[in-house]
Image 1 (tube, rainbow, N blue to C red):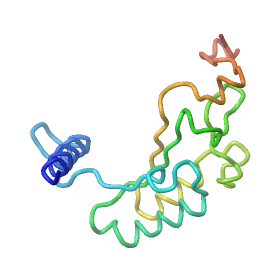
Image 2: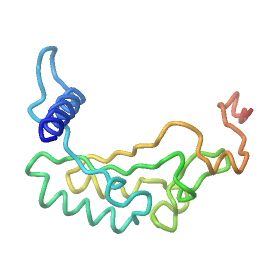
Image 3: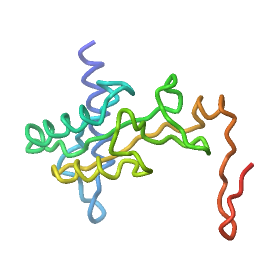
Image 4: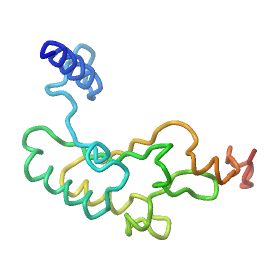
Length: 151
């Protein structure tokens, strides 16, 4: 079992290293990509306050060791925990993320994370959310001369 785990860690580290920004051709990243994803610990229930507290801990304790990324993940099927707009697109829950109110999205949170010296990312699962399907929202396919086009 130990050999299976070590093999998995080795492959994961290699793939993460390949994902790093590389300079000229043939140059290798000095470290694999390192960070912390809130979903792995809190699922989809983390509050903005908890998210920022964890970012502060990462900045203070792990940034020196190469952990520079802080992410938040949203599932397309999150059992009703996500909030959607009129087009079925996922937006931050204003009850869990008060700084997102008024259409601000993750702007304030990302500014705070960046001020801690960390990179901020959002992982959204592909597909149409269950909430959008149940709400039978129109699909926004673009704008044509300023007019919304839907199907």
